Image (cartoon, rainbow, N blue to C red; front, side):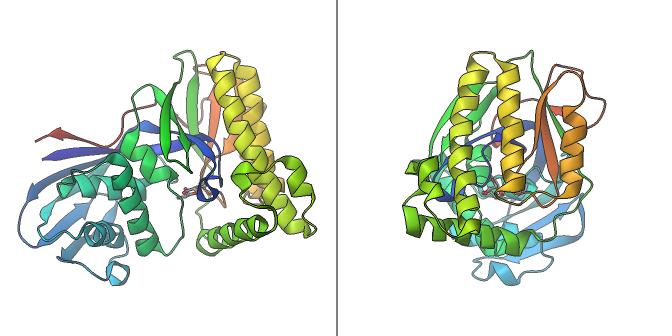
Length: 329
Ligand code: GLA
């Protein structure tokens, strides 16, 4: 059996998913290919990106103790799905850079390899729990839900409260380019959890950020929590305005919302780095670039730019693609 599970890039809406806000990611035409055969009570996998293979006995109850560490994502899915019969096989990746959610691609791919047959939303939720168990990071639903539900040619507007997903066409006269900053994410584990707790603390003061308005954020007296809330509230607005501008083919306006998103992630949410900021500045100064921003969690990783086709000679152009699927029985 062959399964393809794509990576994802988020066009706009970062650090909004775990407070039930809006995000607009797309699955890309690159990802992981799993070639597997169903077999007995274990999973045996090799990966072209890691030296050590994964061997996971089933049923699996302690995914966070498995070595090598990449196998924890596989074990996490097996544990969440209560798998008793496994598979053996290989993973090959054609993801051009880090920061495109290879772990979520792995989780959703493994779930399909284990014969998962339920709804795509339940699939994403099980894989989110697997990621949290495997990494210890209290991630949101964006990555797994994108990879589980994406449609070719479309970015996915996700309402992270209801988990409703709607496809938004990405026109062919636009190019989406990902560029890696060269910076490996290191602070991410502890800082991500800290940001999430700060958002929760802001919600204790003004109620759900999803329903709050900018004026509500200004009532928070703690300056740090005020900034965090202002980012989330304004970012949710930007996602909806970006969808509107994309549909109206107003690419300049859409790009400028991406620029505002980066600035807010830098100044109010404080998840950018000088390297990311410089890269974003360079891209924005290139003719044909409508906008550029860090994408995903931040603290290093990748940048996404929206451009006229062929404007950039750095990075990789990606196309919106369908979600994880069995490509050969
Ligand atoms: C990581 C998480 C997502 C989301 C982004 C930031 O990719 O896995 O759930 O929170 O960071 O938008």
